[in-house]
Image 1 (cartoon, helix red, strand yellow):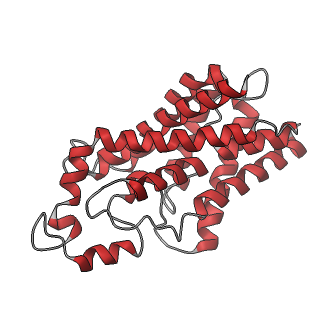
Image 2: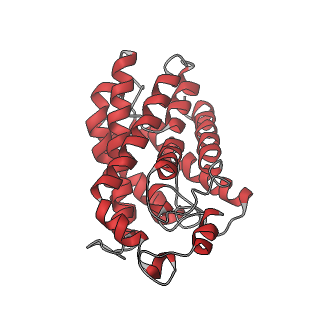
Length: 264
């Protein structure tokens, strides 16, 4: 695979991943959506199918890592680091593009949600108080969960540990069951296995932090949330943003170590 193929494949694949994954979060969250309050099952299966679609689309070009933690683990497994920056750049860019597409697809719903006084406060739908907005800026705004993850209980070591554990499960499944014949990306059957593993992680381990298990999946959309002209959007919770980056990267490295010791 050439560097250009890797970059294009990871950009397209991660954009699809975030478009469909963020899309199900928007569908469940936003007040004017037909899928409003569809629940956690909808989110977990939505993300699982998002992984499946994204992998099948991008695998012929890049091997469909779609996750810096997976790229890191494969680099540790193989000792080949030359394309890691290309993978990571495509993944971050793709995640940002996917998040922007979610905003476009749900533009009217975002506006209706963020100008509703029951959501953002204030005496009227278009007259949110500065105090309410200021309170949101200190942490997560009312639609940040569409773009990125956040903890239900903010305990830094536990939040990191949850992300590490979930990512170890994901990456071990990829390394042991998911790789193609060349061992540099996901294969056809591996994509299906990985999609079901993502659903399993969401159902079993997603409750505490929202299971980022992917630094690009969280960081790229969080940047887009900070940049988009959303009314009354509140803060992007940058104080938490390091957790879904550091935790999955640690998890990927640990999983690669386990694989090299136990399976290689």
